[in-house]
Length: 510
Ligand SMILES: NC(=O)c1ccc[n+]([C@@H]2O[C@H](COP(=O)([O-])OP(=O)(O)OC[C@H]3O[C@@H](n4cnc5c(N)ncnc54)[C@H](OP(=O)(O)O)[C@@H]3O)[C@@H](O)[C@H]2O)c1
Image (cartoon, rainbow, N blue to C red; front, side, top):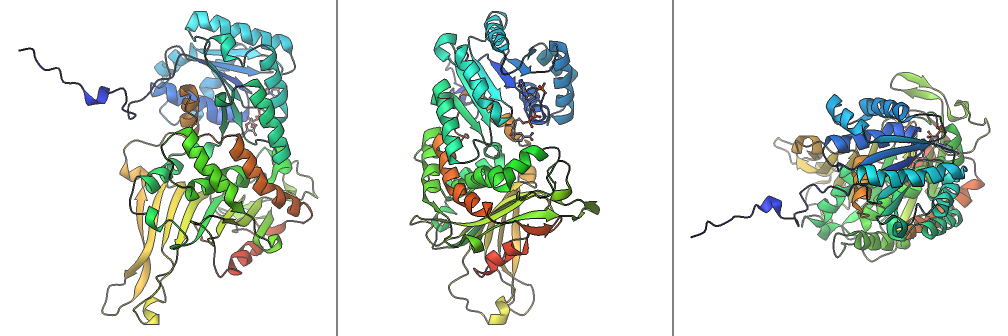
């Protein structure tokens, strides 16, 4: 009898746990010599290569103005990988990757440079077998998007039909600075690339902890029944930074905290927290559910009370004296740009009616932390003496996005002893302790997804526009106000505390 051939379940091609390799392709980075490329993109490419997740025919092609050779760019890439990579830097890995690093010198308004880019990609088809596949990463100032997109249209670089492979474009935030400009940008991008080839990066969605929200909510049976206005008192979403504006004064002063963080990262976190279960785990189904939430978001009628912005003054952080925003280099002394923004939003659905979502972000706050806190209502009846539960707060489920990635459940427990005294305790889950595998960097995950053609973690046009619909009236209102002041190293202006106090609540101190 012929021996039975057992199939290895780990080799089942439908098994999504197996790593998938993208097609041979070129990753063209416009702005390859810039800050983002150096700090994030190139290290992420190295990490992916080191993990064996890039195909043999992969090419990293940098495009920028400075007069560099392939070798100069490879040196720059090596240094940024050595400094910024998450996985260990290994000489033999780098040597293999270095053979696939190219540089093309040119300015965005230079037709000849884009013609050279088109012919370089054709050459790479022959030398590396990239089969016409290319992803174009726009790691450049947003004002340059139109000229670069038009150049790609003119040269046919954006056309998959022309190339015989796939063509994708990756766009960094900010996606416009208001609804009107976002619509213009979306129209332009959709005119040049097919919508399914457009990837808007909100790097928060690349974070493991953010994706864990899907697992927490939809893979468990425990939370979903209480994930609604019947049990939830309020939700607090915080993204705090201890740093100031660094070297990006020009960009920041034009943008401010609400456009920089609230419009994208915080609203995406809100959408993931509040969305309904998608019918399946695919890009369209997830985006549909997120969009429904964003469409249902309402601003408070009394913006003066429930939308607060602030600007940091000099103060102390980690034992060091730090300057105020107006004393930062290249910031106009009369700037009214906010470095802190907080707002109370509602979600007008049956699930969330009456539950306030408090969002806040700020620079020069006491520490770097991003978290989503679900604050539950108190038990409807407490069969104890009032003094027994004097120290008992609301139950809370806190999703720690960064750092100390994990989840904390805060609940009441009896204090050991003869009396019945109930006090808050915490149960902690830490990614770093529960798993041996370290979490990939957000950019690692997102670049790989672009090359694989998986758009699940990328917001689409409609989400971006809907987010501006929420932010525009806030910006309009704030335009006529002066930001409150707050001391660097504090948790923001007093008005932000008063905003919650007016509702009988307090901000968490993460
Ligand atoms: N930096 C961050 O941490 C960060 C975070 C989130 C999002 N972003 C977004 O990422 C994008 C890039 O930011 P960045 O901080 O990396 O900017 P950056 O440091 O100013 O780099 C800009 C890059 O664009 C190139 N460039 C500028 N004008 C050019 C032209 N006319 N022709 C050809 N190349 C030109 C520069 O090359 P040369 O100097 O060689 O000319 C440089 O490589 C922006 O959209 C930003 O909003 C950045």
